[in-house]
Amino acid sequence: MVEVELRSFVTDDEYGRLLGFFSFNAKDLGEDEQVTFYFDAPQDVRIQLNSQYAKLWLKGGKLHDEQREEIEIRFAREDFEKIEKLFAALGYGVKIKWFRKRHSFDWNGIAVALDDTKGYGKILELELLVEPKESETALERLKNKMSELSVKLTPREEFDRRFIEHEANWLTSVL
Image 1 (cartoon, helix red, strand yellow):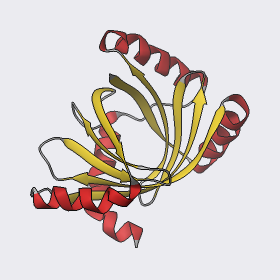
Image 2: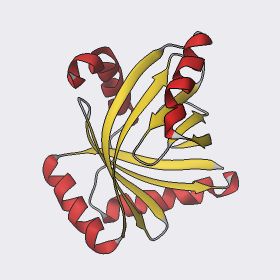
Image 3: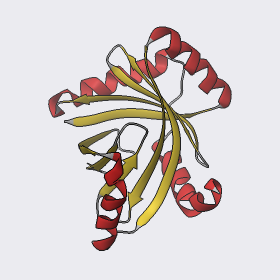
Image 4: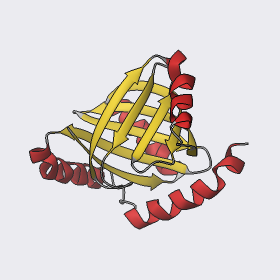
């Protein structure tokens, strides 16, 4: 499967407006607090602990690509520390940790996330998981939905810049 996603930084006001819109027009999947570890590895590999489960996942392509192959494995929350120790034993240190509150919705088959990440900002993310041959159609659908929401897409360069800043300062922003 290919993850097709669009995201944009949003202001506090936009976040509130979107939360109201999705609360009324989409299926509310609830709120979650997540801690995600990005590893200093040759590929984009992460582990996450949330309120329901833990997961390990590998994303192909480059960070902030609109379309990426994704492999995800869920595991028991109580095994999270073991998985972290396994990566450390393999020589992969934690490059960055994300502390995020996420509100999720299903909006006519589109996975919607309203994120508030400590020290990073508020983000709207729209996502579809599709077969590779459907990725371009899915991307156009998401672009149309962003436009329908009156949300301007944040350029990839801005995400890359802010990620680098957050990576350099994440520890001080969460204390």
